[in-house]
Image 1 (cartoon, rainbow, N blue to C red):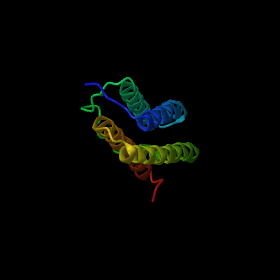
Image 2: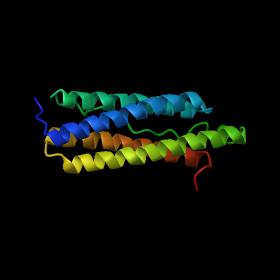
Image 3: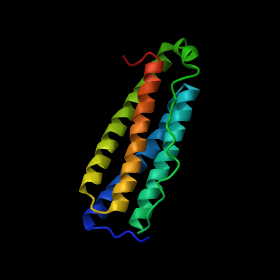
Image 4: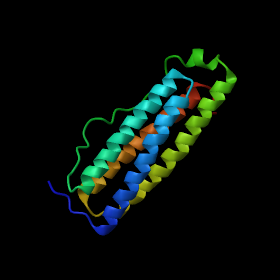
Length: 155
């Protein structure tokens, strides 16, 4: 199915692609900087999902409707190993918390951006894709918050 885009939708999708590109880069950097293997894994998973978002946006810009089925598994990074992590060096824990908070600010920004894009789009395929991406971005935020809480870093 060919997707016909308005100029406004095309511009918004290009902006979303730029945002996703930054998200990919940041999550890859965060995965390298995090000291907790659980957090490293979560950041790597988020980077891969951001890459999928980028590809979906690219497909829309090419006039194709991307598949929005699958791939949206709910993240649950908090359980398992939280106790042992809390008892390690406090400095590392603070650095990991800072990475999470930075990622949460990024997710809030991008979720808001998608929210605006959803309301401004007239094309059902664009709206459906943006809604799917926004749902996953909100799951990222939830995963980050769950991680912080499991580490006793968010009250």
